[in-house]
Image 1 (tube, rainbow, N blue to C red):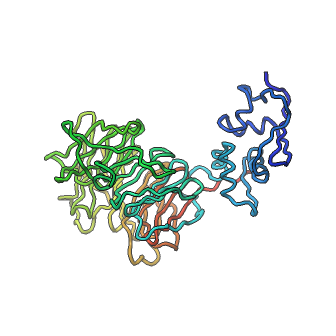
Image 2: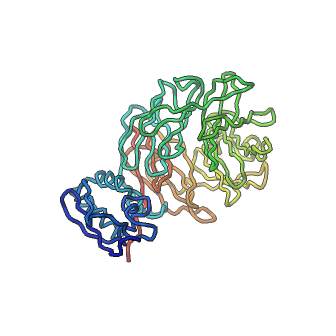
Image 3: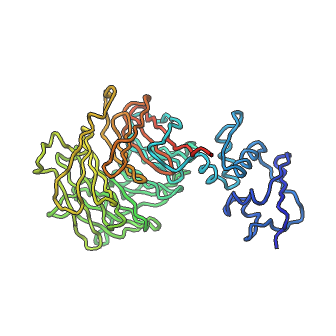
Length: 441
């Protein structure tokens, strides 16, 4: 039976604090304070009534107030990252994140800060981590940032160009690149997000022989599979499948004379239909190819191409595509940033285009980047040169726009861990957008 009284006394770095077991219960079971309570949320018996913790008392005061009120107020004299490090020690990072961010909403995002990259040249991709960090790929390097936006050891591929990156979890990053990864056969590797060390390589085997390959776009499924666009030395194309946990190849989908996979620019796993969207886009090829592959029956079950479409190729060259399962449709965006929609229930159907050029305001950047698409929380996001537009509702009405004057055009963006990261074309500058918590009434 736990101690029945509710009062708890702490000595933190020589300063005395008193609180209640009820307040400590707000920290959750996985925290240091949760371990002090039994299954009935009572204090567990111990010989002394005071707990001594050799940590920063000023930070403890901030975190204790967070447990009492649910609000995070950091005095100006305390560095914000110091609070985060102390929260990590006590197991309170989830509490801090909840207080710092509200539920993700593209229409309420505010700019939280910007970070200038440390490497020369343009960035090629940015990927949000599951806990609110991110990684930035450029050339043969990946720079990794944790939730506190502190940079970890970079991932370096010995001059092999990186094609795509993705997070398995907060500790592991998958990198796809040209063959060999500079470290052995194979164009994909799993790396530690904290040390940058290579943990294992993803290999392609055919007839009991390991093949060299270049890996491109990647996608991940909820049952721990990795899908990657693969190109062999003799220009053979296909989609490889690996187990995230073991790194072993589990399947391979070869290009057929009946359809073209090519060196795909985007892969997207569709959980409800158990299919993989594969899109090869302009300017990789003069024409756009989009297909859905069903790995259960090893065949393509849906396809579309702009060849022979009743629109001119010059007008409607597609730069990105994303499937929206809830509406059984695929959204396209072309180089003029027009949105187009296709019905997945109709094979070979046309595209319904809606122009957005009338929505664009301001001066066009000198070096505009290709538009990108993302879907999150029922909202559609599309980059538009130096801004990101948010579309909502069944008719995808433009409801807000995110714009930052510093950094030039947006070459990529990513959403994860309740943050939106936007990578600009100049000096690898990336912005961090967050949704503020709702006001307390």
